[in-house]
Length: 458
Image (cartoon, helix red, strand yellow):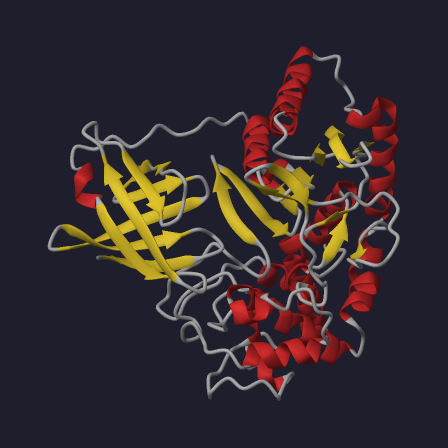
C-alpha cells in the first residue's frame, strides 16, 4: 500500500531532473542509453512529423524506472510543453476500473457474476434473454453498442442522465444472442457502471475515488469533467487530411463507465501495482477478473473482464488500450517481467502503433517472418461475418511467393500475416485460424482479443 502511494511522487521527482523529457536513472550504462535513445526515437518520430501533438510515458521494470518522460506539446496553440505528470483522458482503460469495482461488490456478496444483470437493473428489457453480469464485462452480451448506433452518436454532445441513456440503449435491438460472439461493447460497460451505483448507493465517480483511486494512491485520477479546471491537463487533438485539429466535443455523461476517466502515467503504474498485488481485490476475485471469457460453444477468448490477455513473444501480458476524442492510451503489464509500459497520447492517431513499438523495443523482440506457404492460395478469398455494429469483411490474398495478407474492408492497406502452423496466422495482436471442410478452408476464426468473430468464405 505504501509503495503505491509513493510511486507517483517518486516518478514526478525523477521527471523534474530532465525538463520536458523527464529523467531515466542509470543512463550511464551504454545498453541502457541505447534503449532510452530508441524509446525517444520511436515516440518523437510522429510528433516531429506533425502527426501527433505530444505524449507522456512511463516504463517501469520492478523498482527500476526505465523511462518517465514527456514529449511534444500539451497545448499546440499556446506552445505549452508536455509534462510527464500531465493529465490525459484514458478512454477504455476505464473498463478495468469498472470491472474491479464489480469484483469488489462480488467479494462483498452484493453482486453475483452469474446472476442476470436485470436482478440489479430490473427495468431493462432484454426480450426474455438471460445475460449474466460476467457477459457485460467480456463483450459477449449481444447488447447493441451505443457507439455503433448513429441515432445515439449524434447526441454525444448532450449532457444526459444515466438512466436516460440506459433507456435509449435498451430500445436498440440485440446484435447477437448472449454468448454467441465477442464484439467490443461500450453499452455493456455503461450498464455495469449503473450496477455499481445501484448496488453501492454511491455515484460511480465517488465509488471509484473512495474504493479504487485512494486505495491505489492515484491522486491525479478522476472522472473527467469538461468544465473543471484541472491542473496540468493536456489538450486533445483529432486529425484530418490537413493535419491536427482540436478534438471534437463529447459529453462525459456518455463514455461513463466505459471510458470517462482521466489519469496520468504515474497513477496508472500505481494502479497496476495495486490491482495485481491484492490491494484492490483479493486473490479469488482477481482470479475471476483475469479469467478469459467463454462463448456458449466453448470457445475460449483472450478477453477477461475489462482486461485482455496476450502472449507477446513468449511474455504474458495483461492489458487494455483506450481511445476517445483527441486521446489514445496504452497500458501494458507483463507480470512475469514485472514490466509496466504506460503511454498516454494527446492525439487521436498513431498512439497504439507507437505503444506496440515501445513494448517490442523494451522486450527486444522482432517481427516474425512473413508466411511463405506452398498452398497459400488456399486461404485467399473474401470472408464475411458480423462485426462491431456492422458486417465484417476481410480479403485474404496470397502472392506468387506464398506471402499471405489480410485487408479489412475500408482499411488503407493490407497487413502481412505471419504463419504459426496448423492453419493459424497472426498479425500484431490478431490471430486467425482457418477451419477446413473436405480439405478446403471454409471458416475463419478472427480473434482480435477485443473481438471474436466467425467468418465464412463468400
